[in-house]
Length: 217
Length: 289
Image (cartoon, chains in turn purple, cyan):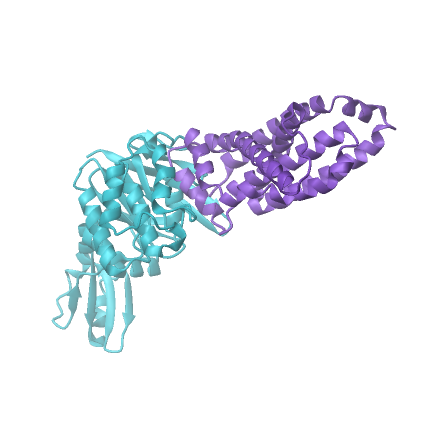
């Protein structure tokens, strides 16, 4: 298991570490809107970090030179079980989330200093937990798609999911005042996030295992 | 001698192709060549052995243990070479070794460096910048650096220049000096096999046509050439195949039946593996042993 995780770290593209730059400038622009509500502030930054974490998950798996099938040949030729290969992928989500969080914190601080802007306090327990949960949710949707249709399909799914989620969140906030059940979610957003992440990850893990065990390479 | 690899009635069906009842075995201390035309099922069989493909039925035994779906520990003892770029293209040769080495309990870094030196493999060069032949050398260096007892290679000599092909064959002969090891490799270049293979297994359209000792196989058949006037005499022994040429005819027959021929104008030659593969493949005849 450790060897597989080490493999993912050693083969990760270096460009993945500067991926947060894409979103940081956008976040500076959206700062005023995000500061209007604590839920929006937490969800906005958590979504950004989760998206970066998700991008790192994709970068570590998706190979630009189209050698996805061949890398499965290499992995399955090595003394390692299919079960462990899939488990290591799910374990690595937490590593990529951590890398995303760290690089986001560093780059956000640097950009704030360069632009002479006041940086938001991002080392926040709520952002930590929500971004981790969201990284797991995005990746958990992508993994079964990747094992069935390949990483290109997973990449597309993830991008649609991110924008769909961001758009859906805005709509949810609008309805929150009108619907009692949705308002309840916003009273306990972290618990909702945690439960959703756990359920989605558990289902995704089981489906991924099934698909990868059964697949011929 | 102990059997190191055994396939019993392995079947696998795909859309438009099937491996049918594939059975053969390889003993320790020997090299087996696996021959067949493109699309005959060589790579599919190798992928079944390595559990990249799940057979529909049949059994695979490696080192005396049933291997179907239970290969993790057994793969410590297997070295593999695929005819594809399986390594991490953005990493250097040394970087690839750093990723792969921890998977093997018996990884020998000194042996890896020795093979890199011997094969002129540049440790600091990225894999994507290597030629196909050099990538094959890397695959071979990796396969040999964890003291594997069974080495499985899919078309290892394709894309290699004649000098390295010779070196590769010499390396295989070195490896096989240890009688606890065995090598199984598929190739189109049957001339290479005649130099090193103790056994030949021939697959055609997903079926094993023959699996036997190389020398016995080469002696079992004969190529007969002669003028058209002698064709009738040769036809009488019911050869496996016969074709007319510009100067007469060429016939492929079993040596046993050819012994009855006495015409002075007939030339009897030992066929090459390529001849055997060609004629048996063309006629669909063979004998499973």
